[in-house]
Image 1: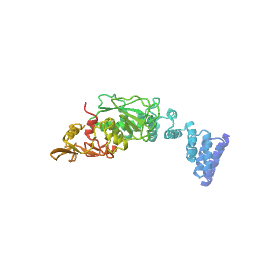
Image 2: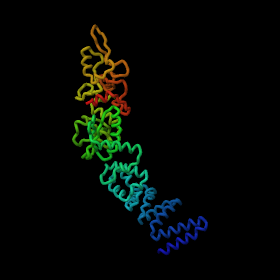
Image 3: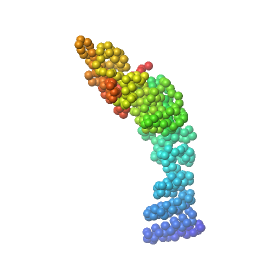
Length: 412
């Protein structure tokens, strides 16, 4: 059989001096002979040959034969030519140790939220990290991070490329390695699943730098175990009914897979897709700041009527904007930002010989008493200290008055 193959090769070589068409024909004949003799690489080459000639069905048959004969490379072509069976072909290629197929299977499992750590371990056992391309290093670092930093595999920090995105994640991760000492504010995270690590590190890096601009030293910790049961959104809002014990001295943050960010009973619920600016807004709620956009429905009515035990530090309410002298003095005395005022909070008026005060600061800028939209849908008027849009009205604006930091995080 081997002699027949050698003879075939000699015939092909002899024909290379002939016309191109004859050469191509001889090449095909040679491949077919080797293919029929059971040579897997010849079956692979024959598949590529058919593919170049536009013979799709014949190419698929040749690639299938090559794969059956242990040539993992054929799995990639089969997956491309027959996408409906791509998982089947790629898994076969991965089982044969073909690394590109293993990477492809890992990506599919990752995208479909299927377990992949065992296959990843096998892949890394046979792959030198130094030989990885930039794209492979990026993908591998993503996998290792979203797998929850498994201890039996390389750490994502040792694999990730040196790009701004990865450096930022490393900065965030480093914050969780520090001891929480002399903290002005401490964040304690609990995560529903491993993929929450990425968001948590990104948020921490940004929050730390933003708070440092106000000379606030923030610390970051997390509960090492994942939440015992999956989170279940409450309507559209993120919520996790089963959590570990909370720390009364920290900003407790629960990272759920999905749902809109919200804060209830001083516990912040975030989804993995939320931004750090949203977390900054929710931190405000956890530290006694109220929304400055129009509250909706029953919540608005009850909050503005003072039915909640929650005392907002950035919003006060009044039933009317014209107060007697005694009413104005009580209102002013209860103002959370009284000691920071730089503008008058009302204008005196003489009505029938008595002094009344019209609430509101008329001069722009400074710290005073300016209308807020919080109680817009009720019969109450809400007031705030500043006359511009803050992060408590629009989280993504990033406008954080220094006064709000002082109210949330008093100097110890």
